[in-house]
Image 1: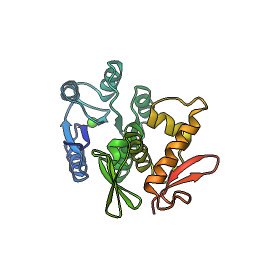
Image 2: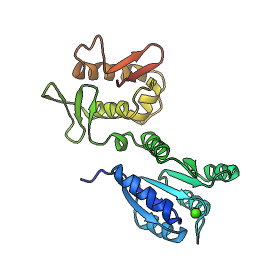
Image 3: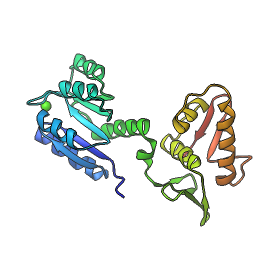
Image 4: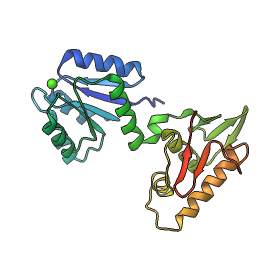
Length: 231
Ligand code: CA
């Protein structure tokens, strides 16, 4: 299974486009390119992407128009707009059209990568950590729903896997019970579920922590929620 993240780069300036593609491929993304608005429109109609980098000033169909028509047609792929320097009004228009973020040219590629990862974490935590990853001292394999602790393989439930994925995708951030419930269970919380979340965390700790009474992987933040801290 190919779980590499696919990105469409829509940019007419060859230098910027080639630079972007090299950089993104180096960081293990699968990259498709479109050099004008029309090509972008066709490519998006025939393929699905995890994220689109969209230049605003494009030949044939503008980035603005593309973004508007994609959103109107129900496409919810995250879009980062590439805007020219100083065009503040352009940026705001871009966001109103349904772009998730924008970055101003000339931008640093590291900055762009940070934005891409932030958006992928928000939209799909599974995509940003992948199927196999380290979680504190343990190894996690989501596809086979097991964790490896001191060379011992221990099965986990689907919900536990989702919880771990969510924490792994959001390191060093306090996550409220509401947010966990919404992101992992996909529902709004209305009071009683606080205990559901706590019970699942307790159960997960009994599986992954050396000493569940003094957790070192998922810590409790009093009155706020939980945090996964990486050193
Ligand atoms: Ca351009």
